[in-house]
Length: 231
Image (cartoon, rainbow, N blue to C red; front, side):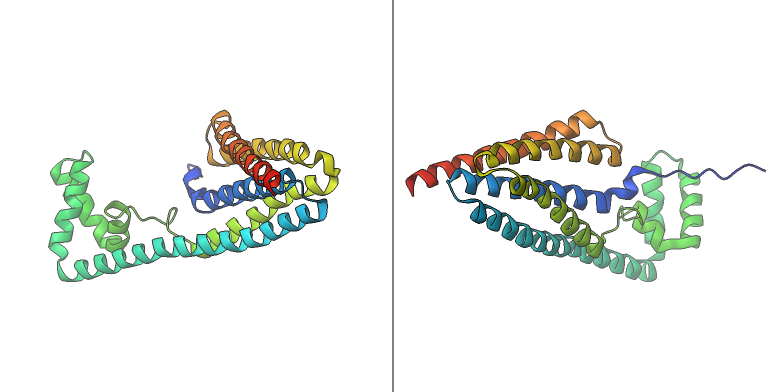
């Protein structure tokens, strides 16, 4: 008796992984940029930390709300398409069978075999088959608003706490270089972890995350320096 072979694919993580990486990256970059910008404006340490903690709270709530709303819109679209497909299966079963057959022919099956496959899959689960093969909606990639919101808010908070900790521990004169160095190190780690979880190349993921994070901090520090000098 052959043993059951179970495969686990990286695509199954795409729902929470995208939100988690986005949340952590935004938490690190936005909070570090805020702290560096305020510090560059010659503010005191209490003001710098207050701005950072306010950014953490506001950012986490904003990320949760934004993810929930955007992914809910995707879920609503999927639900509407499934409702339409369910209605068409009830009203035009032959047309839907022809449509499914044409999909399989387009993927390389001969017409007779495509028809046989379409018939058997329709008998087993007509709506699920059309959702997967016609609408590209599957259990692995379906929208999960609450999961995305929680993952994004939680990882944003963790990401934001890292540059805040560096600012807390550093003396006032060293806050900017300390936060920048720590944040870049955290971004390297995030890029590597995100790439590993998604099964992608680490170097590309690290370079992408670090480049945009460094650019954001540099621009914000410049703005803080200019406006701080003016004030």
